[in-house]
Length: 394
Image (cartoon, rainbow, N blue to C red; front, side, top):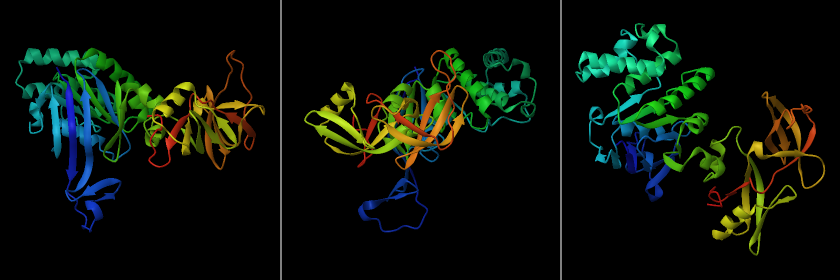
């Protein structure tokens, strides 16, 4: 079994910059916490990964995701906490004895070897019989569709083909855990899409646990059974792609997950007895019964909030009813939809409008500086505290 358990994992790097007197013993430096120990690159990381689960660590550059992966691999020392793979403590176990394999961003293929020899190399190190090596290499090549390239050298391959070879070299070992550190970031957009599909197929065919690191939230949403969203060395939220999209834990998660990014408005949450409404730009939006119940269960009081609404959940309307108004500044044609950038309430608001209606009739276009009215319902809004940026429902 290949369960992976990370409990209270920490990574501290020595602080090489000139020390200053710090009130309370810590400070923020480059958005990371600095203590007397040093710079905290990863803080109190806790995660239980099930056998054969595909978990994605995602976040902006410098958030600690690759450092966490390298600690699992044994390429970085663990400053604190416990790492277990298959129930065994791995903190001080050498990388070669952890039964893991890693795919790097840079492919890391041997340029003087053929594809066949690259795939066979880790098996030769283990001194396996030649017939067994040949069988495993041929099987991996067939799974990844690179059989016809076995006698070529890496320089004769495209980027996508090289990445397949790098993945193949990892899976021939049949590791308990397969670690992937931004493996698609060197590929162009079309190849990235193709390789995402290949990785989804691959995980169905091999019996291993995946831990995948990326800064691309589209990769995270399409690949992961669960997503771990990180910022400044701290886990912000763990959940399925649908959970983090529908129920973001805080303002950062809501803005990081979803393309285009969520729209935000300064608003006021008003509680009257046991009922809530949100007032924004002269209109009142009433949260649905489910949201009302969650707010009430946390005894949320009236307060200024950041109101979030995703671009696909904004509706364009005529002049009737409670609406907000905006002026079209940019119109991006995306084929099946148009991304309208409006100026409303002194800020940029994005609205996604389908180019055809439900019967297939094409809608009218939008012109720059056109005035449009829009609104949104209380069932799809998100309410964030201005004090600590958390989602007030959770």
